[in-house]
Length: 190
Length: 286
Image (cartoon, rainbow over all chains, first blue to last red; front, side, top):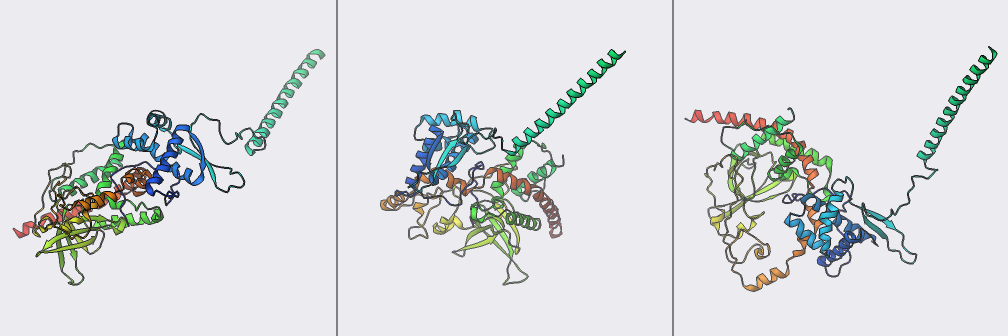
């Protein structure tokens, strides 16, 4: 039984945290594992959308989330956060992007900062693939926009409601015309 | 107003913890309401009551058990005064001994380790008695404990003082009749920056590998330091997820402590009553 460490405060992650960290088959030990993750996190921050193997995507997603949440929480004047950004981002121009672009972009988010999809793998390969992206990226969405699908239940209901409204309006108009005709014919009889 | 009073009383109670034996209280404190201030208060509590935070290991988490444990802890705190203390503070613990029924045992020593969370929270006291090092591991919420007094409230440079076992005995010798040292009101907990001199090897552990701040130069041959350097893991401090999995996120801490706050206030009031009663007693002696 351990006591929780209290020296540093962290924000809660909005993604699922695995109970155990993956070793990622790194021959060089934990240092090499961090190196692998570092490359992926740097690529994610740089390109905003990457396709890679699932385990590595899932693992580096947590690290990217932590990096962004720390950047939002402590800002660029906090020495430890700066050191962390310096370690995790191999290309140093991305440090500016993290603090000046991504932190302001995500500051009001109530969801996770990244999104992950499973990607299809080509037949002879059985490795699970994934697409990892930052939210609010400039690329077109990966999932098709289903809002206008006529068969979706809310669209069906909306159509029916529209139809009912229209028939009601037509009836009203017809009633008005009837009344007008009646009055005209009554005047003519006089 | 109702919501602010418990917090106010709690902060007063905390001050009492710090000053421990002084009788005056300061009711003149601005009631504060905004959210950020609660947060600040709550984040102070994590230093004082670290055992209220759950074990961060995900497999061990169980919200219902944690909640039940917290309520049990509060119930225990209503009966016995468990003051604020840190590793490096000198404590006196009075406990019932099952081998000598009807008698109380008082042990004075320096707290060299705090461990565990919830009802299993414990602390290790060390003293040298008759040239013999003695350590007693107390469970904080053990019902046989009759009282805990903080004789000297201070912190040290390290989170664990286990190296005192290999240090010269004068560093862990404390008089059992030591008097309570009262800190000025509102003062931060002082950090004792003493550097301890260790006895020559053999030791109980390889202290040169522990990156200790509170010890003097270890006076070892160079090969020991070389080996320590080889075994260092400098990348570990960059492992953001390891860091995350060793702590409890702030949102959860705020939730836990704001839940506990009101209850602690009640036990704090009970403690105050008790203290008053004990305060009357000395007149009989005189």
